Image (cartoon, rainbow, N blue to C red; front, top):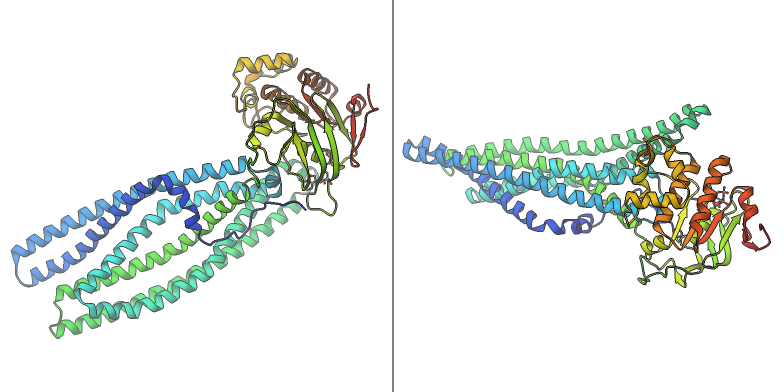
Length: 564
Ligand SMILES: Nc1ncnc2c1ncn2[C@@H]1O[C@H](COP(=O)(O)OP(=O)(O)OP(=O)(O)O)[C@@H](O)[C@H]1O
C-alpha cells in the first residue's frame, strides 16, 4: 500500500502562527517598526482621554489659562495619535501583503514540485482553493482586521494602566465585574468557533472542487442528460455549506452576550463614580475620564472579541495552507545529490506499485532497458502500462523494489535531474494558455525561437506548424485553438527533443488518432530516437507490430520475437 500524501480536511491547528513565522523572516524589522508606531499611537490616544479630564477640571475651576493649555494639548494628542495610527495601519497592511505574496509563491511552488501521486490523490478544486481562496481570506484579514486587533489591544492595555493610576479601587471593581464573565463568553465562543470555521472552510472547498472538476466534463454530462444528477450532487455540497455556515453564525452569536455585560458594567461604574464624587473622593473630571475610558475599554474588548472570530477563521485558513505545503513535500527530496550520466541503462528490479485498491497495479516487475534500446509495452486496457511508464520516469516511487537509471535510484535522486534525463510524454498532453512557441520553450534551458524552429525541422514538423493559423504564434491551451490529442503529443515530443533526455517514454495517444497524425508522431519519434532509449506504451496495433522488444503486461513478460 503506497503512502498517499493527502490533504487533511481539518488540519492540525496547533502552533499555526509559530509554524507560519518562517514566512515573516524577511519582514521582522518592518514588523518591529509597526509595533513601535502602534504603541506610540496607543499612548497618545490614551493620553487624549486623560487630557479631556484636565480640560473639564480646568473649566470647572475657572482656570482659563489651564483650559487653553489643556485644550491645545488635547488637540495635539488627538492629531498625533490619529496620524501614528494611520501610519502603523498602512505599514502593517503592506508588510502583510508582502508576507502573503511570499506564502502564495511557496504554496504554488509546493504544488508545482509535488509528487504526481499527491496531485492525483487530491481534488483539484481543493488544491485550487488552498492557493487562492484561503490566501485571499488571509489577505482580507491582514488588511482589515489585523490592524484593528493590534491597535485595539495596545489601547486597551494602556487605558487600563491609566485608569489604575486615577483610581485603583474603581479599576479593580471594573475589572472584577467585567473580566471573568467576558473571558467565559470568549472561551465558549472559541470552543465552538474552531470546528465551525474549519467546517465552513472544508465545505467551501468541496463546493469549489465539485464545480472545478465537473466543468471539464460539462459537455459529456449534457450529452448524457446527466446535468440534473450533477446539480443534485452540487446541491448536496451547497446544503452542507449552508449548515456549516449556520453553525458558524450561532457560534458568533455567543459574542453578543458581551454587549449586555458591557451595559451592566457601565451602569455600575457610573453609580460608583457619582457616589465617590458626592463624597469628595473624586473630581468630576476624573469621574468623566473614568466613564469615557471604561466605555472605551468595553468597546475595544468587544471589537477584539469580534476580531478573535476573524482571527480564528484566519487561523484555520493558515492551517490549511500549511497543510498543503507539508503534504505536498516529496518524501525523500534528492538524497542522492550526484549528477546523472548523459546516457545509461534503465533498470527495474522487483518493482511493485499499488494505488491502494485490492490488487497492485504492478507486481514484481524486473526489466533492464539498455541505453539506446527501443521497447514497446503492450497489454490490455488497465493492465498497468501507463503506471510502468510513470515508474520508469521516476514520477511514481515504487512501493517495493527499485528503479535505477545508470545505477542511480530514481527515488533518491534530485527530481529536477531525473526530469532532465528521463522524459515521459503522457497519453493526454495538457498545454498551458499561451502561444505554441511559449509552450514549446517551457523548459529550464528556455530555448529561443531559432532553437525551437531547428528542433521542428529535425523532427520533420515544420510543415505541420506552418499549417496552423498563426504558425508558432498560434494561441493554444484552454483559450487557444484546439489541438487534437495527437497534435498535443507532437508538441510534447518537440519539447522532449529540446530537453535532450537520455530516455524518452511515450504513452501513445489512443487508437483514435488519425492516420496522418499517427504518421507524423511515428516520423518524429524515429527522428528523435538517435542514441536515446525509447519506450513506447502502445495502444495501436501498428506500433505493437513494429516493436523489436515487447513487454507484455500485466505479467511483465518480455518477448523479443515481435516485430521486425
Ligand atoms: N490515478 C489512479 N488512481 C487510482 N487507480 C489508478 C490510477 N491510475 C490507474 N489506476 C488503476 O491502475 C490500473 C492500471 O492502470 P494503467 O493506467 O496503468 O493501465 P493501462 O494499461 O495504461 O490502461 P490504458 O491502456 O487504458 O491506458 C487500472 O486498474 C487503473 O484503474
